[in-house]
Image (cartoon, rainbow, N blue to C red; front, side, top):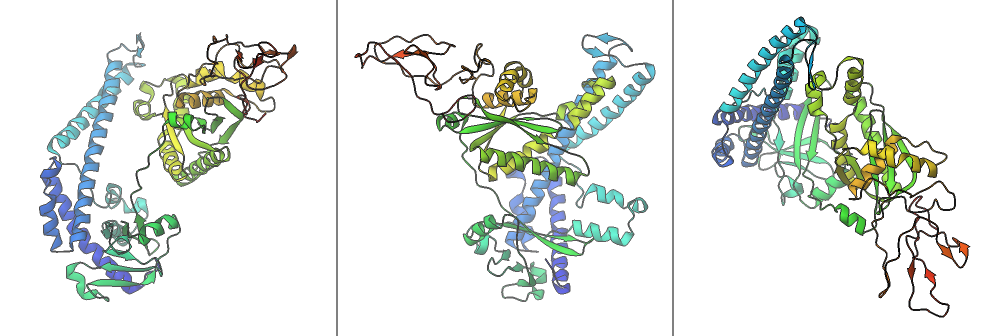
Length: 533
């Protein structure tokens, strides 16, 4: 927002007033401790805050205090879990003599490293004791404004900041000017209202600041207007239907600008199951996440690979903002590929290297080989990729299916790499593409391994089902099921007049004018290439 001096002054006064009372409420919530929801005294705290603001603002402050308290408790639990894992790993290695190995546990290299690890374990035990005490008391440490910025106050020279600049940033971080939305209210929010027709913004001021209002009923109308570009259509759909929208005023002292953020909760979507995707005849795309690229392959409802393999580069170098932008670009290319092939969902591995990263070289190998492996694992953005893919795919109307990553690369190379290379002469098929096929088949509920004797190199009979077939062929009443065969069927003394996608032979008892004739099921989609016949 291009706020004028008067607008900025009013917003600053309101933000400081509400921020002060919100911090008081947060301190009171910490004093209450770890109790049930019905015992957190939110109603009483809201009534006391209403005297200094309004009912809706008081509700937003108590909600923010509760969210901050619960988040801090979860951080304490995660820290305690991480410390226990590190202590457990060091304890196992300390129990083994230096330079020896007991089972899969290797002792430390020498006495110096052994002594350093014993000191390290004492430090970790002391930290764990403090964390467990805070958890038991239900009193987490919370710094409103950020602990990093608070510590910067003691190192202004290294941060290249003056005391005045630091004070401006500190005050801006501690402002609280937030209003939760309410369905049925004008434009989805009564306290902070944005008119979608002209972009005007009006704010209800707290009770002690009502003398600054320039509109009836204690409202202040800003002289500037706002316009949302990102997801504007979704925002318009909500405000025109008077559905709840939350607004937050944010001040950036470095640029001297004010920003207005809008947020809302997404509706719960009923996603189709893999069985429904197969029943509707929808395609899916399986992807294998690697450190430098994504390997993808499109599969039909029967689990057969279609077309050629795809590789999407993943170059995550540079600052954090650039890495995040390149990751989003990679996911955008993946979604575009899925739409181009009319896929209903994306199948990925449910990878999580958090535990491995926490243990470090204690369990991920040592030496040059272990260092290379740890560097590779650190370069795979599993958690961020999963979160970005889930959000972007939801808005694109795609389903994300997470599967067990066990043996996908091994079986993909063993059962799928060579057959796929035979059907794709002009494209290099890697073991990662085979893993993508294995991942996609597992997401659809099919077995990964292929039946032996399927997809041979003979040019005449290479167009057959490449996977373990799951579709049943109806058989005529009163006949026995003929044996499945991997050879080409014979029809009238000639070899394979109809290059269809037949599975087995069966008799036609209805037409006996020419004896028992062999009929074939009709198939319009080849299992190997996905091309119409």
